[in-house]
Amino acid sequence: MNPSSATVDPAVLRTWIQRARKGDIGSYQSIYDSYARKVLNFIYRMVHSPEEAEDLTQETFVVVYQKLRTLKETDKFEAWFFRIARNFVYQKFRKRAPSAVSLDASDEDGRLVPEPADGRKNPDEAFQSEELEKVISEVIDGLTDKYREVFVLSALQHLSYQEIADIVGRSLPSVKTDIHRARLEVRENVKKYLRV
Image 1 (cartoon, helix red, strand yellow):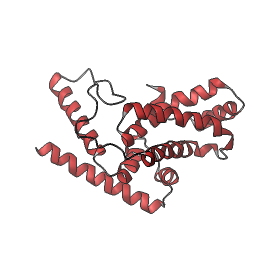
Image 2 (cartoon, rainbow, N blue to C red; image 1 turned 180 degrees about the horizontal axis):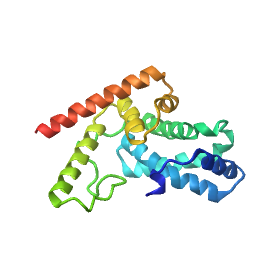
Image 3 (cartoon, rainbow, N blue to C red; image 1 turned 90 degrees about the vertical axis):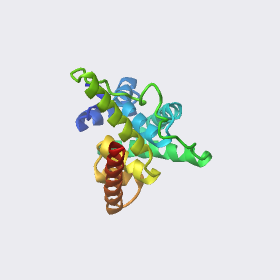
Image 4 (cartoon, rainbow, N blue to C red; image 1 turned 60 degrees about the vertical axis):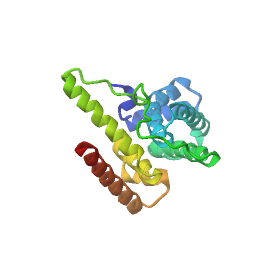
């Protein structure tokens, strides 16, 4: 299993944070290895550009390293971390309007972090699975920023409602409502694609 896709044990994370605060580069590298893919995927879903997502991910990690000493509650690290990434995304949007992205603009090389194809599938099944992933990706990209952000944090990053509320700075009921609406919209639009 890719370490960046696994959930980090809270005790291990606390140790890494404590050591990284004291300048231990190895512990900071462990944090980076565990969270780089998550934040890269989140940012990419928001900006639709692999290059910008890479840049903003690096900027996020620089700030995380610089401000790690200011983090009071290590058990809220992930929410704090995603809030920093989110701030970079919105700063970028404020500097210039995001460019419009066509539905088939998920790069030719596949998604930013493609999942390996399941070798047990026959070519027909593999193709259908790939097509479905592409459709879902396009549907998610078509959500409004408000819905896409909470949907990605919930469905793809598997964060709790409370963590998402902390990240986006909104009330828990508001976040729950938006996630519910986003899920319905995704489900409906995927059905439309599949009926074509």
